[in-house]
Structures are given as structure tokens and as C-alpha cells.
Image 1 (cartoon, rainbow, N blue to C red):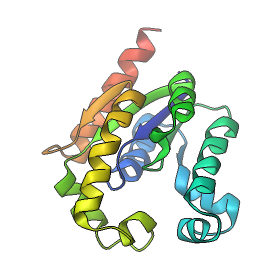
Image 2 (cartoon, rainbow, N blue to C red; image 1 turned 30 degrees about the vertical axis):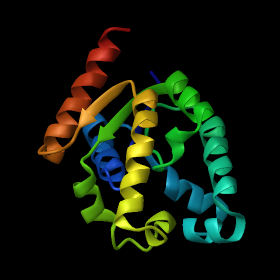
Image 3 (cartoon, rainbow, N blue to C red; image 1 turned 90 degrees about the vertical axis):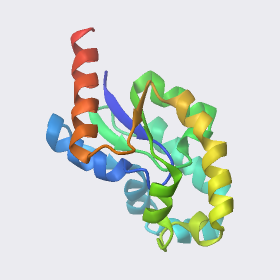
Image 4 (spheres, helix red, strand yellow; image 1 turned 180 degrees about the vertical axis):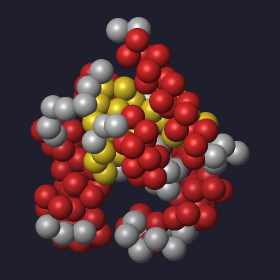
Amino acid sequence: MQKIYLVGFMGCGKSLIGRRLSYFLKMPYYDMDQEIVRRQGMSIPEIFERYGEAHFRKIETDFLREFRDEACIISTGGGVAMNAENRKIMRQTGLVFFLDAAFEDIYKRIRNDKNRPIVQSSTKEQLYELYQYRRPFYRQAGHIRVLTENRSVRQILDYIAFQVRRLKGGQ
């Protein structure tokens, strides 16, 4: 196993868990959205506005194809798992954890986030529909589903670390 990917809806905790998991497992951590911003020299809202969502999704796929070959943790963008090629790349190059959070918890975290173009242009009901639409794709992408509701960050980290160690020992 090379990489550990964290997938799930925006606001489910991928970045927070990824950063903490990095210290926990002593592996480098990369936030896909931050890496894309750094490489493109513009924010995600700017990329969406200038080039559109389809172009941004292509950048995500290029990132997965081209990113360095090292054992690391990558928190993906909320839409990455929608693309079948992205799911295939992640599943072939690493272990994929689906952070499955309740919509109400997610909505509390994202509702005022100005750096999420989809949130800014959608109602709560539209976001819920998007959440429901995307969940099956996260399940398809993930090797392991991690229920986050009513669990502390530490409990989530312990569970993921246990699964990583279990699978490493089994190889």
C-alpha cells in the first residue's frame, strides 16, 4: 500500500483527519485542493469562475495520475470520487477511506464557507440532494467506510490507524 486517500462530502473532516493521521502514522500529508491551488496559482473559486467546473475536475484527475509516487496521506476534494477514472486510480494506488458523516453535521461546518463555490451557489436542500447523489460514489471509491457521527477525532484516527496496520500486516 502506497497512499492513503480520504474521500467524502465536503466538510466531512477529510483535511482535519488527514493532518492528524499524518502525525499519528508518521506519513507525509497532502490536501489535494491546497496542492491544486498552489500549482494553479489561483483559488478554487477563481478556477471555477475562469475555467468552469469541468476544467477543475480534469485538474483533479491529472493530479491523481501525476502526483508523486510515495507513501502518503491525501485528502481529496469532495467531487473527486464522482469520476470513475479517479476511483480506479485511487483504489489501485492506495487504500481509500470513505469518511461518512451525517449531512446536518456537514452543513453546520460548510454553510458559511466562502471558499466552496458549490456551497455559495446552492440552497441547503440542493446541497442535501448533492450529498445524497454523491454518497454511492464515495462507497464505490472507498475500501473502508468510516462512520464519523458521534465519534471523536481520536476515535476516528484510532480506527483508521488500526485498519492501516491490519492491512499492512496482511500483505
